Image 1 (cartoon, helix red, strand yellow):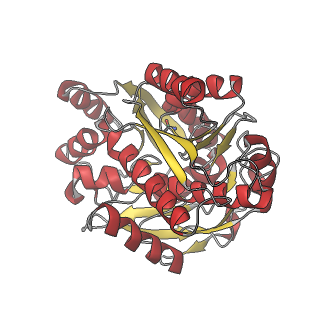
Image 2: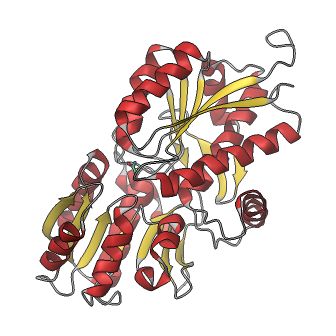
Length: 383
Ligand code: ACM
């Protein structure tokens, strides 16, 4: 073991323990800890225990840039797991590129990006935006109202959403943005505006704490989810737990993973996660992606016989992992991950009932070059 003599392998972990998106990022942090515990219990990576060096991103791009620099310049780390908000990924990535590190990014995002120093394990647009738009148009009609938080991810997601909706004969009445920390007034104003279009489907790209207020305000306004559902990519189990089942019931989310998924790997993952982090701890697609990408890394390092970022990256496509969502693997051409698109609806107990499932992992297409190839046609319907 020439490179290390069994010395700990330090990896960086960058999530927001505090800040507007902490509710979901804390679950990602927990998931990385669980995966690292599992890997260490099995002997580590190339005989080395994995040691986490962890900083709080505070949901802030400035902090993300500074903490990425700390990891790479001072802590001697080259492998980093982290980031939820696209604004923090975009702030950290140039630093990771400069120091030839590798960032494993476990969050759905807007696509249209490639860095040879980043592995993207959350959903690309063809794996969640397109399936959501298609499902909502089929089930709820052609009229939409888009509302998001005021930063890059919602803008870019809504650009794709609008293109898809209008290309297939739908209409977007309005596209509105609210602050990352919306006041009650700001939430009321946008919900009052939505009420001008009864029966429209709402697409929410609101993230973090604002999600709770928005869903509750829609409920208070009397919007019936049977005819005016909120469709989202960012409202997962953590956000639903924060707002409560009453506000969330009947609303729809598109994601590659739901806590309710019935797979052997998911039962094992759920049990292990909740044993470590609490029996009621919510687990979302972002949590699962944070977990499985650490296992992808460990498998690739073993296969490469190296912990060098370049060697790991080259080995990754040949190292699939049986994740809770299904078998996942990294695409050699675009560094994104084959995932299993699904559609879920929140039930009265705050759990996602899975309405549509894919029968195979879908190839990531971050630039939407081959929208016809995303193979959603092979979906299985759960009625
Ligand atoms: C996100 O900002 N990618 C959720």
